[in-house]
Amino acid sequence: MPSFWEKIQVNESEMDVYTSVPEGEGPFPAVVVAHHAPGVDKFMQDMTNKLAASGYAAVAPDLFHRITAEMVESAGKSKRDQLDDSQIVEDINATVDFLVGHSSIDANRIGVTGFCMGGRVTWLAASTNSAFKAAAPYYGGNILVPWGGATEAPLAATSGMRCPVLFHFGEVDENPSQDDMLILDKELSAYSIPHQFYTYPGAGHAFMNPANPARYQRAAAEMSWPRTLDFFDKHLGLQRAAGSDEPACA
Image: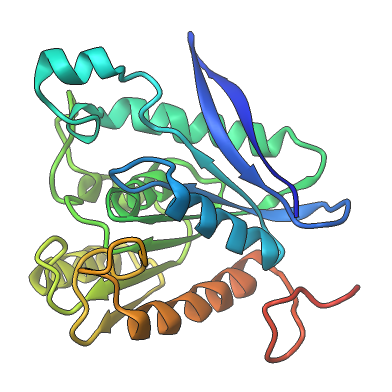
């Protein structure tokens, strides 16, 4: 399973994209992986690799590529706090264009997932790019809040979604909270967007990340991931052998 970094152009800027692809020639269904606040770290690379091992070409764009260490120091704000929604949309669109233009990718079978801030990015991406056929946010907070120079939150763009949504929540998470879940459910229902929400008992934020033992909850992680794969398999058309994470032989 090859894994490597690519560089793609976003307007006048270069963006690093961590890429992991299944064995074989394809064309493969693909999943964009939106990273959490620490960036495209080992956890994000591991999740990207897991998708590739399950038959998906997976790519994790570095949404912090415009923000330097000097900018963090001079502004006294984290990279996450310097993101702008319009630039996030540009980055996601450029990533999708990269996938669509690649001969080993089936352009009609592209999904998106993300963790923490990446869950928020997943919602925003699915609301603004019709290429996505499935969206699976994990505990995406701040969907009700605009970032950077944006005047509207991702929630306001929900009418643009053209794909089903699978959303994973931690029961004791405060952002997104269970009250937030009700708002998101109401918004998706208002536009007749197919969706399924799962709440994991006793789980808080970042329950998928084993590198954060204070937050990691093994039961929730092990329950949610097969659901995510099943969701992508259904909507991105990947067949796999019964009871296996491996794609079925053609």
